[in-house]
Amino acid sequence: MHAQTDTGSAQPRLRRPSKTIPGPPVRFRTLVSFLAFGSPRDLLSFYMDATRRYGDIVHFGRGLYSICFVAHPDYVKHVLQDNLHNYPKKNRFNDMLKPLAGEGLLTSDGEAWRYRRRLAQPAFHRQRLAGFATGMTEATQAMLARWAPLAERGQALDVSQEMRRVTLSIVGRALFSADIGADSDEMGRALTVIFEHFNHRFRHLLSWPDSVPTPRNRRFHTAIATIDRLSYRLIAEHRRADTDSGDLLSMLIAARDEETGQGLSDRQLRDEVGTFLAAGHETTAVTLSWVWYLLSKHPHIERQVHAELDEVLGGRTPTVEDIPRLRYTRMVIQETLRLYPPAWALSRGIADNDDIDGYPIPAGALMVLSPYVTHRHPAFWDNPEGFEPERFAPERVAERPRYAYFPFGGGPRQCIGNEFALMEAQLIIAMVVQRYRLQLVPGQHIEPDPIATLRPSSGVQVTLHAR
Ligand code: HEM
Image (cartoon, rainbow, N blue to C red; front, side, top):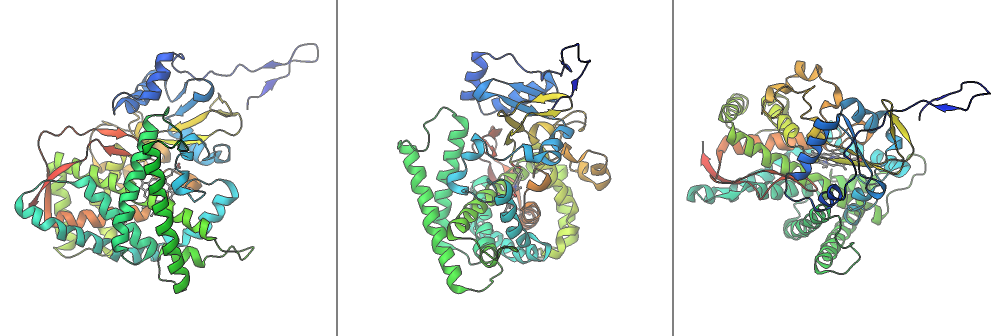
């Protein structure tokens, strides 16, 4: 809020003139292009151009479509960390996720969120994470077995779809322990319908609300019902077994509130299952799809990954102990997350009027942050479009402000699965790269598609070449 200058009792109270947030004039055309998002790249270019033109804070639209967009790391820190209570998750974009994620960890706010986070956090402690590594390598092994005949025949495959399949299998094992087998295919199909629906809604803000029984909405509700049915069944089975099988669901079932001694209800558990299925596989799959794309475009970097894996593993299956030694592989993942952050935009509500660096932030507008844009900020990144994993050498990381890079968000709402995801990506890359070089099928035009996540437009077709 802005200070007021009291100039004495005879004078009227004067408001200190505040800066006005710069931004494009409100034009019907801008509004329409915002609602229709012509081509896939438009929304990314829209925010990139706006920051180039207006600077680190930009105001778009009015009324229902009043949006504050911040790109400077200090402003991002203000929203995610310093004054986070003023920027709740509740807003019209996050509300789209509710049918899947309910009032779970990703979408809840305030005390309800704090309680959920306290219960889920122990599952992501170092020792627990180590326990998930075997599930990760087993799922990757199964994928490689599927790939073997395709490699022999020289047949192309869509590696982004493969990555979605393997990461779903991994998060399924981490959540429910058992390989969910046939359920996993049914769940995978339902989640595909659900994500397509989110993507459609994201791209067409003027589409019918979920409650209108259009064919698309009906498919969506059927898919949600499938997730409900399978989740409740798995919850009931876990409750009956009454043992800590080391997975996330049994930990959540066993968890009790320190003060009241109460545990989570079936409905609350179902929301967490939906949350982890939603947040825990698509983002990692998108990251890995871009890793394969970037490695095949940069053979000298691919060679360094090969050299590291040959030296550290010498052909054996990686284990959790190898993770800290696969440094260059991790830097490749971090640099991929810089260029193509799957969560390319984060949104927040604005509870009260606020002030960011002298700019008045209006209550009720939507706050948008974009890792994609900040990760290309020329004041913090040289050659921002270049793929240079060395940027993530520890001494270079220390030179940058914390919020110049935030693919996992930040502050107390930072991604709970970030170490899980990095370990998973390292293990999958290590196992695939030891066996194959992935080459892009020529003639593809691959661009980032800014929908709910930053998927490569129309997948990534590759052929597999034995090393
Ligand atoms: C490369 C992979 C991943 C990326 C880029 C990613 C990104 C993010 C980001 C940006 C947020 C914060 C969203 C916001 O502030 O609005 C977030 C939150 C979250 N992520 Fe991830 N995520 C990844 C993997 C995972 C995995 C593997 C899991 C679970 C196994 C997971 C579970 C969650 C949950 C539950 C939240 C909500 C946390 C809270 O609000 O307390 N994520 N993620």
